[in-house]
Length: 457
Ligand code: PFF
Image (tube, rainbow, N blue to C red):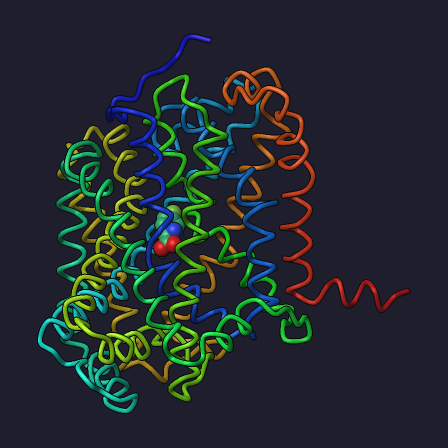
């Protein structure tokens, strides 16, 4: 096949791709979401299912997404369109790209609001508000923040403006350099926090919560949340990794890159869990406290450790950057599509997409205060968006990607693109059979169908 090139540019090396994709993967999902959903779903059993989903579903699908992206070299919508033609598949596959664009809008609209919390905490820590604070003081600081629509709106606006400005300038340059230094720095600070957690006297309890497996603590919904989080944390199922794959130089090994990204991402999540749960138990807090969990526990750690003000400020700066590098990948698919199909400049495209997402984000801003009681299925606007995207739209997108890469694409194409050698058959088996069946099984389980079927026998 004649190799395509991307009109949007290319990463300067394979390492940069790994860093950028890891920058997309590592974000609020690892540090903010993983601990609180683990806490809500009872700990160890949830963690095991999440890890199994990363290995059996996430890794093969990530390889498929990178492969499709590199072969198509365009926005996910156009990549799916041309690959469908090339592989003799139905043109309707391009709607998979659309599903991804909508998922990206939904996710970034709430992601930006939570990133705003991290930004606010940079200043809280810098102002010394954590020093010596107890659980009550830290809890009311968080309450004060989220109950103020004005403040949430201001931080959400700042975060969206920065994201849009960076995306306007394209993928190369600043972003590459930033990720290279910031990711390792975040890892070091997480290690500092784990070091502190060891001194709380409750480290063992925290570890036991994370790693001792009791399946009776995990219900059907928990199973779905664990799988959904595997997609969310690896940025899969919506074209973010596909668009980054489209900038990957030909010849770079997709298999090794994927492993590196998945390992890094998982490590950050587990370290965050190990840093947070000991603090939760040491202060008599609730593991299932919900989305505020890290904002109500980490300040206690920073408030009690030497140089805590400095470490806290640095930590929340790095967390904000980690969120930023994920946010960029969330809007990149929509922006590239506007550039390709509407002939818009990058700046214009990014601005329009940014504004649309900012507006949608108002729903999340108000769901923590003015509209906190407006609920559907017992969930706020934020709760619905989060549930719908992570647990339904991303796994659905991932399932379709697996089906396309495994069944519609010729073996010759995928073999050539992946260049996995003897591992190719293992990948093919995972992408054709294991990943799709696992996703469908967990979907059916979540809507109670498996129970009903087994009741028939
Ligand atoms: N993976 C990111 C995180 O864990 O914070 C969130 C995310 C980014 C999800 C990009 C989906 C995506 F396409």
